Length: 115
Image (cartoon, rainbow, N blue to C red):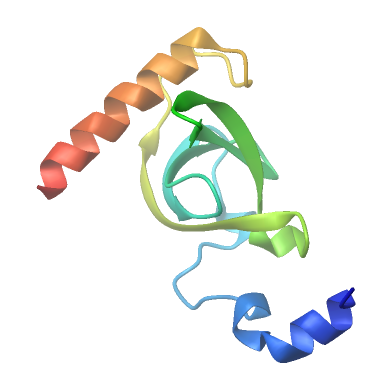
């Protein structure tokens, strides 16, 4: 099996911070961001993680990934656009039905705006 150091030396672009990424220290708690990550494209910052809607095997559910500034291998989220702030009254955790429904609706709105 390849070591992390070998993988990093063979794939330096993965480990270089992108120039358009919002640094961890500039992310706003409860802020909603468009992100590049393994499983999310829209997520709420809960420091140092982001909660968003993940789809796997046709099932959609809330899932947390962590800011790239945390470092490999767990830092996978690169926020690049702040799109808003979560309204009051929505709990910030993976089991929040209100958060799930809000993000589902917001994703649809943003997708329609692009089309």
